[in-house]
Each structure stands twice: as C-alpha cells, then as structure tokens.
Length: 163
Image (tube, rainbow, N blue to C red; front, top):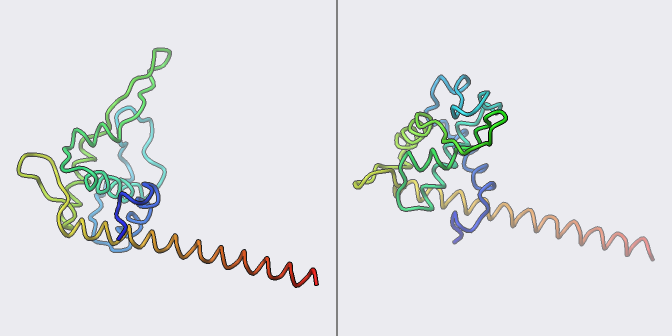
C-alpha cells in the first residue's frame, strides 16, 4: 500500500488540501484574508485557500518526522527577507499562524501533542493521510491507463487510415 513518502509533495498537498476544504471540518480563523504569513512579507497570500494548503503541508511534514515543534515549522515555511541594497537573509515565518494551523488540525484529530514537546501525528491522522496518498496513486494510475488507451486508439486509427 503506497504511503505519503511514495508520492510527490505537491500532489499530496493539493489532494489533502482539497479534502480538508471539502470536508468542512477544519476550523478556519476569520483573519485569514488579512494576515501576512511572515513579517518579511509585503502582502497577504493571494490564494484564498492558502490556510488549507498550509494545513496540508504541516500535516505532511509532521507525518514524515516523529514530532515537530512550532519553531521548526516557522523555519520550514520561512523565506528570504529582502533588505534593500543589503544582502538578503532567511527569516522565519509567523509562529502564530503555525500555532493556529496546528490547533486546527488538533481539533479535527489529525495531530496531537507529544509528551516530550511538539506535535505528532495521531492514529486517525495517519490513517487519513495514508488513505489520501493511496487515492492520489490510484488516480495517477487511472490517468496513465487512460493516456495509454488513447495512444493505442490513435495508433489503431492511423493504421486504419493507412489501409
């Protein structure tokens, strides 16, 4: 059975974010359309579904590691702080946004607090993420089979035209 490690990060994050949005269980704060995701940013995210994408990325990151704290997530989602004519440096993202994402995932049962600090994936969360990964792999196989069948049909039509 394929797991989260077996598929690409962007395919999994897109699928899990759409699953979170469709389920409607994830509690999205009211300030998501106003907030910047880091002090080094100039504007808020353009994508209205950025909170679901961030939640999916956080869930995947914690799934792949034993347990992760908020500080590690801020480093992960940080970026380049452009400082004018001085050299750019890495800057961490907002810890508040990371904390609220983790709290939202805890409320729906995907994450739980680890006894020695940080957050870890729960049994239900692991099952959900594995199920989404399996669905992504099956969808990719289905698309590949459809493309193969279309290619075979095209070859058969060309052979018929040649005769």
